[in-house]
Image (cartoon, rainbow over all chains, first blue to last red; front, side):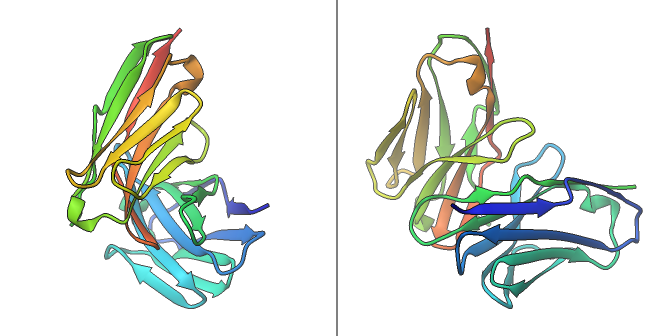
Length: 112
Length: 111
């Protein structure tokens, strides 16, 4: 069966520090991978999605970047965090067909 | 920018009551319509994905309908239970690889 792992679960980082959140998927190949963010009081916003290794689409201009170095690995990064980067980050994957997205457990990021 | 709207924003019902929420979306960009349940401290969980106008899907006490021509979907919960308390997200798929989420409807079922 397919599983998705996301870590860390919580993170407190100072403004200006770097960020790296990792997401891996098991039990499937060539998944579509996504990074979403939920800022306080708002819905889920799509940040990046990837349909293959090295292929990244960015949905909103921001202080973040994403990379997909391996088929089942998706990384969210920042060189210098801003206060506005605080939020709940979710990784998700989808395959072909219409089964919907499977989400990771999320990372609560607080930038102080 | 495509906008997916959900109403109401929040809802409180008594245990045993039936309830329904609405998701509205621009019909010109339709590829698929997703519903998710997001319980506190958990990840969103897919309930339904619908693609055809007039689709109706059911899972236990929860069902959903879809009207792609007018751009709306309804989610129904029959005989609400406390364990149904969650945020219900609807999401518009505009292509096979891209989905835009609505803000959600927060449901609280009072025992």
